[in-house]
Amino acid sequence: MELALAEARAAAKRGEVPVGAVLVRDGKVLAQAGNRTRELNDPTAHAEILVIRAGCASLDDERLTGCDLYVTLEPCTMCAAAISFARIRRLYYGAQDIKGGGVENGARFFAQPTCHHTPEVYSGFREQEAEVILKEFFRARRI
Amino acid sequence: MELALAEARAAAKRGEVPVGAVLVRDGKVLAQAGNRTRELNDPTAHAEILVIRAGCASLDDERLTGCDLYVTLEPCTMCAAAISFARIRRLYYGAQDIKGGGVENGARFFAQPTCHHTPEVYSGFREQEAEVILKEFFRARRI
Image (tube, rainbow over all chains, first blue to last red; front, side, top):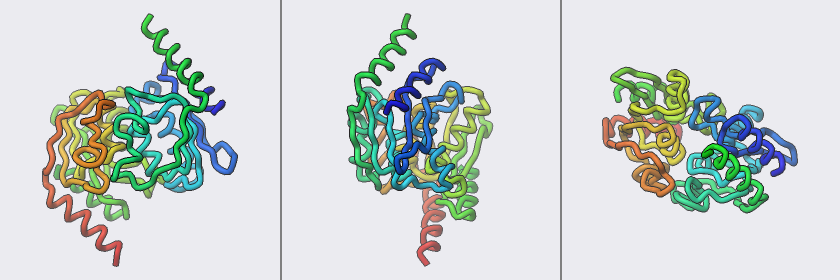
């Protein structure tokens, strides 16, 4: 989660909503990324989607069986569904996202009958640090 | 929708789940794609995501304001959320997807409080043709 927080801070410096994600397999980092929606002009370029795509590319497989994902913020509904499609084993995340989350909030995708693979979910990791990064980013943008 | 059906048929020939999508702006086709998850080893490479990414790249914008999307099958939850993020104006789709859809089924993403842009949604276009393409594909794979 330390690496994911560093990716979130790096995203903030690029003017992106500061969310970071790290994909791990067998104790090794397979991919790490921060949000790049503005830089790439791609509304799907959330940190989670970027590490899923990079991880699949490096494994040459459309499934990430046995891989665990660390994210600083509760994944949105798009990312929750992508995590399920990729067959990620465990999801660890930091802060909750009441306005945009899709795991504990809103669509609660993993609890839907249309969700066909549910990862183990653990939340609240380094929650306060993840929240501070987001709050400082949005406070600075409002000035 | 004719073009989207052609993309679905082309996807089937490549061994991909046959779904096709076309993105239109001001009466012109901005992007068209079929599902390529297997070919690209990318679980996010649904037809809708591919045309959203291609459309954003061609407009050099992370929003597809004023664009309409034609898809042969009800978008899944991941794609529904991406459609919302991309600010697509109207969504036209063919067959319903009871097992995996995220618009009329399952998460019903556009009706969630975490959905901050809802396109106009029209369904049932060329529904039977879209269903036949899917049914024939899965029947052939079971043999």
